[in-house]
Amino acid sequence: MSVLEEYERAPKRLKVSAEDEEELEEGEESDSASPGLMGEDEEDEGQRRARWSSSDRKDNGSETHRIAPSPVVHVRGLCESVVEADLVESLEKFGNICYVMMMPFKRQALVEFEEAQSADRCVSCGSQEPVYIAGQQAFFNYSTSKRITRPTNADDPNSGNKVLLLSIQNPLYPITTDVLYTVCNPIGNVLRIVIFKRNGIQAMVEFESIQNAQKAKAALNGADIYAGCCTLKIEYARPSRLNVIRNDNDSWDYTKPFLLRRERGKGRQRQAILGEHPSSYSDNGYGSHCPLLPLPSNNRFKRVSHHDVPEVVSYPLPQSSASYMSHASSAVAMVSGLHPNKMNCTRIFNLFCLYGNIEKVKFMKSVPGTALVEMGDEYAVDRAITHLNSIKVFSKRLNVCVSKQHAVIPSQVFELDDGSSSYKDFAMTRNNRFTSAGQASKNIIQPPSCVLHFYNVPPCVSEEDLQRLCTDHDVPGFIKYKVFDAKPSSKTISGLLEFDSKTHAVEVLTVLNHYQIRIPNGSNPYTLKLCFSTSSHL
Image (cartoon, rainbow, N blue to C red; front, side):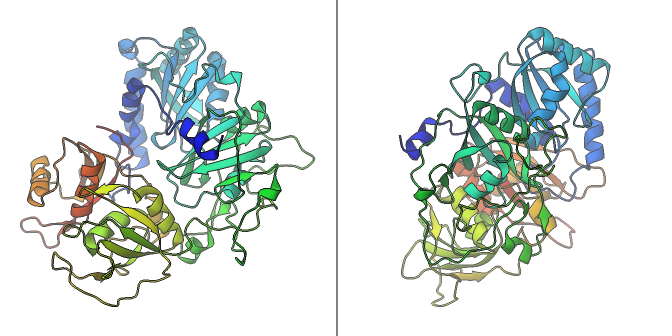
């Protein structure tokens, strides 16, 4: 079976049941501010925890049994650095745990006990006295489901599979076989890795034994590869063995070094060693060290060897890897399939700026409906290709690929059908979202979805005003609206807009992102900012 066939048989995304998905969506992300780029008026951590504490005391107090008892417990209020092993270590005193579903960005998890009595003990204890997970108090309630939906046919994960399915959330930096090997191999011998860049970035990692896979899942599920991004969500995969036909950045068989097939003549670039971001980001002021989260303090997840393993995973890359190359070899993307009347340089910027800084945009006169987009670096191009290739915008499907050009030259400038220029320089615009380390860290890289997060909107703007804005610009209106609670001193509001389809949301973002909202007696306009939300529905 080929790698592609294995992927088609594998689950496309990790799932929970419909009831649990709804339950999780009602958690921290929806109640706090941004699922995308956070606004300046987002409530601070202390306020959020206080609000969580209040609501969860209510959930775990006299009203706990509003939800029927279940062997599945919904855990909330987790700290950012928590991994699956932390939950097991803190909760196994209540009874045997048979499954854990991590929700890292929501700081939540679902824990399925083997017996309902164990869940009863967990919920009851949590309502009477503090229960700490990784040093922070957590809160518990019964799940609305009796069982966590597994992304595999096996009912009992302990029955074993030595292949893990890794979903990388918020992949701000490149994920290659070298990176995943460096993360996983210290815990147990890695035999093969396959990376898929569809529906986000996923990978399957085959370990030498079932026990090694179980240890890796417990130690790494919920951890960040780099601090604040590239978060791992791990489940058991369907295939029990991977078939790798070549060794490169997207697949590698460590038992067959002769499969090496790399382009010759390429000089060795700086390695993406964990603990540092790739060199082009450091050159742009993105900071230096951002390590993987430490493994649990005990030694049960460490591979037994003759060498001591440091507490933070920061190992040299495997010697068999000849070079480190990103998916994109140029900082310029070529975009074709653009609607001739509805797409221009500004609208391309509105869409592509979610994945990296935009330097220049230029439409090609010789190839109608095609434009070159020069981005801040080749990693931004890689993210744009991963998330925007093949999406539909104004009834036309975009094709996004790496350009042979290494820069956009403002030659043969002409007028587009809407009267705007075919070339525009965005290097100095304040609407670029990756211009500093602080800005970059607030971006959650998301694929297009039917829910948009809006922020930087004046409080006087109502739901009707935003609906009218869509109508005035001839784009689809939203079907659901939610505004987040703002601090009394806040000068702006933020919230979520749900649309009938992903295509509608993409079109609205393309047209209205960075729209200037003017208010009566206001000296300066407010810049409406949009991004794709991590929420799948409201």
